[in-house]
Image 1: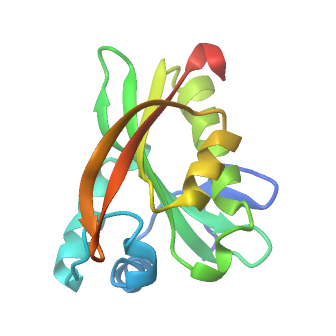
Image 2 (image 1 turned 45 degrees about the vertical axis):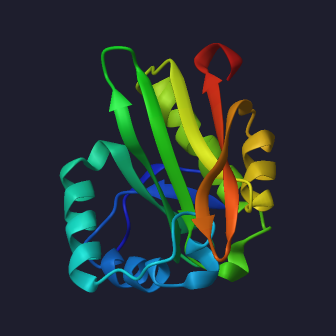
Length: 176
């Protein structure tokens, strides 16, 4: 079945999520080599991940999966985690599901597509995120996408026997 491309890009595109994406997401969320950059280490059940996906499918305008254009493979997702429609500010999350896709700049291109959606299509004012200091790839990617560091929460999270800082970053539509 052909995926519905919502925001097209050169190497990747943002596409509408579908139920079949659950298998990919379930495998990813239990990969310790990826989740150590995103959250405390714990496993998720298939039911937990299915509930997450169903919740996101109900808010389809705030959740996309990232498709690699040449292979049509789903390689990640990006979504608005928290939002303030009145002030037009959003907190976003992005993740790639495959360790082999890291450092290929797919995440940066997907983030730029998501920013295009946020700032050009639905006219939001600010996009915010948090990244952990143990994730230098993500920090480099966000800076490449014009995000600015605005705050550091020191020793915010305990991951794999060490405390890591949480870095708050943001971008205004006027900086886009």
